[in-house]
Image (tube, rainbow, N blue to C red; front, side, top):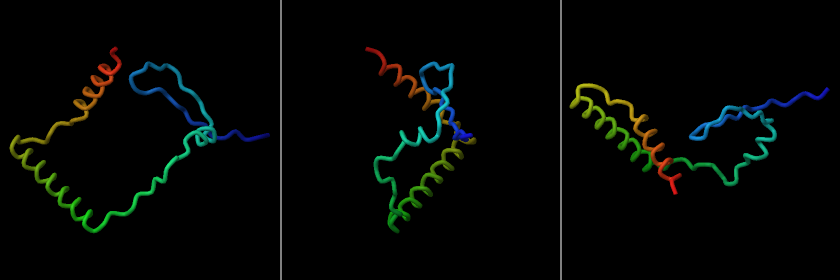
Length: 95
């Protein structure tokens, strides 16, 4: 008897309503999701590493200064980002 290949569950996420899941064989999914470009990323140069570390230290210092000024950690920004994305999606769907 042939062994069934593992399946992946695909569900709808986003703005469209979805009440069902679709079962797809991983092998079939792999056939569809083949990379079309070389996705290798070259290593950072020494100058890029130094610039990134400087930027990280500056961002950490700014965050600490803002927290010191307000007396508490900053609130999460993801609700504002989600709200802006949903507004943009709604505006884009209007005629």
